[in-house]
Amino acid sequence: MVIIFFILVWPFLYFLGKNSSKNFSALVRLRRMLALLSSGAAGISYKVKTDEPVDWSRNYIICANHTSNLDITALMKVCKSDFSFMGKDELLHNPVTGFFFRTIDIPVNRSSKISAYKAFKRAEVYLNEGKSIAIFPEGGISDEYPPKLQTFKNGVFKLAVDLNIPILPVVIEDAWKIHWDDGAKYDTKPGRVNVHVLKPVEVSELNLTADELHDLVYKLYKVNWII
Image 1 (cartoon, helix red, strand yellow):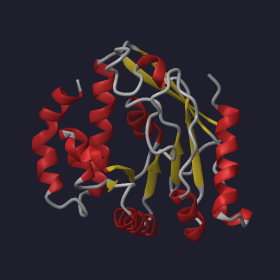
Image 2 (image 1 turned 180 degrees about the vertical axis):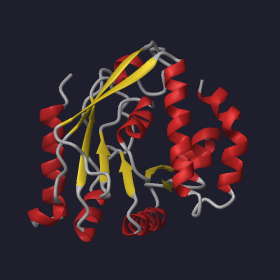
Image 3 (image 1 turned 60 degrees about the vertical axis):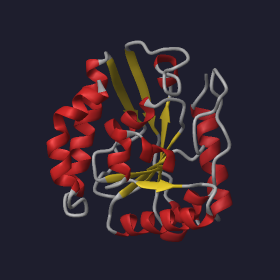
Image 4 (image 1 turned 90 degrees about the horizontal axis):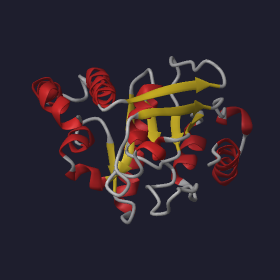
């Protein structure tokens, strides 16, 4: 479904991608439409509940747990403003994700300190421009099934502290039951993905170190995501 819809909108993506900085908002909206149409055609829907209404006039560092490729679409369903994904550079090799990681998203090679530095500097630019950044702080999907919450990487929390950007924790509760990882091992079935958006963590009010912020956010996931 993703490939079919990607081909259908490719002429528009190609045109907008020629000047991705100018057309950033249009690319975000078109990607959201592509993702939701693809999921809908496959019989997959998303239900989002929030602890409190999210003020999308602000920007956030959006953190989510990661057990499924559907998590990407789940965050597109959640986010109502301009945002960029930060993710592993292997996604550059996929024809669909590769287009967006060459235009509006931020690829990072976690084994390279130079790549990680450049990625976080680009994220800093986006955040200072008022855009949000979406990241899976676990760094990838675990090989363990059923999935368990993995250790969070610390870089994103340092970025939040340095720039005083609030963290928006998003708990994706059951995408793995429909489509675990890339769906290759346990196949895929229609269903509904439940998404829980927690109250923003107001970094500017807490005066925490990056390590303390990491621990606080990690505890929120331990409490709110239970298999």
